[in-house]
Image (cartoon, rainbow, N blue to C red):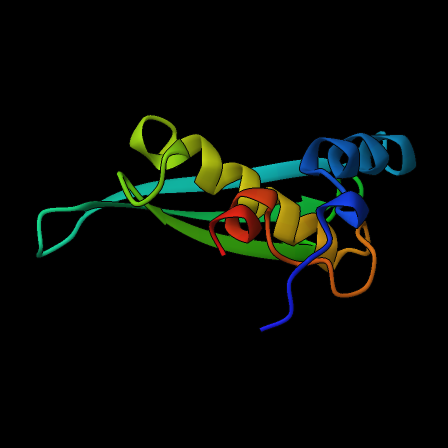
Length: 112
């Protein structure tokens, strides 16, 4: 597995800022679901959608992420937030707001 150079990583907050600068009339919509797994653990699943204006019926890009509560230090208390941020980051990467190949979240790469 090749590892992402964190110095070259484009943080999600920067991608969000760039999205709003380019598409001030756009929309970012997330759908966050809490799932209790058969093994008793809680899994968060998030779908993010990016729309470039207010009248788009279909998103220009989507992104998905999952996190399991307690699976890492950050997921002990912030699994839902981490999941949503990762999902938005993937969505915006799919829309071109990340350098080619820079797909994983910072947290995912720190875990790896």
